Length: 294
Image (cartoon, rainbow, N blue to C red; front, side, top):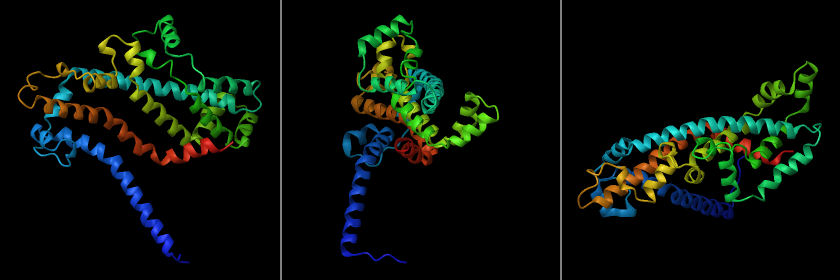
């Protein structure tokens, strides 16, 4: 049956669509401006500033010098290592912990749940963390960016809640057939929990990709800097020396460097943005079921 719309419904729809379009514009425009500025000529950057909608003097010079900077390549290499290894270990350890907490028959699982929840509200602080990393011999090592943040209590609780929503009959039938806990987890539970696994991969990967604060504290060797720390040095410190000084000469030196900054932002953000569409179909389902069930 066709729905009848009242005058109030139509007014609500108009206001709702207007508000959503406005929110979309204020969200998308900064990204669009950064992208367009990275392709614009120095003259267009000077002329239009923050109101640049389309790049006049379209060119790839900024990207040429960004990817010609050896520190960008080193940052990509280190970040890809951190993301790949860190995400893999985080998913493994989170899955093991979540499965143990989801087993209601496991002895002491309530006390373990309490111990995992407490660090979500109380932390030791930066200085104890720094001293711990040094005492473990992880200082100036990329493992200092992986091991301390390997497991998130919130992510483990979400995954545990999702696991509890899986029918017990699946694991019980497998246990009757002689399967152990590792076989039940990796052959039955995880294949069924694809949505929450996709959400966890996205959460951990984005976290490792964007991490820079830990690197600024625990790393002193520039050859171990992740991409975000390299980009921070370029954007905040204004490290013009990181680029070819011959390119940064002339009256438009500031505008040229502004284009380089925007190109650096795009180069460091685009890869993780390209990953999201492949996981988006699982995202809403996984996060809703993982947070509400149980």
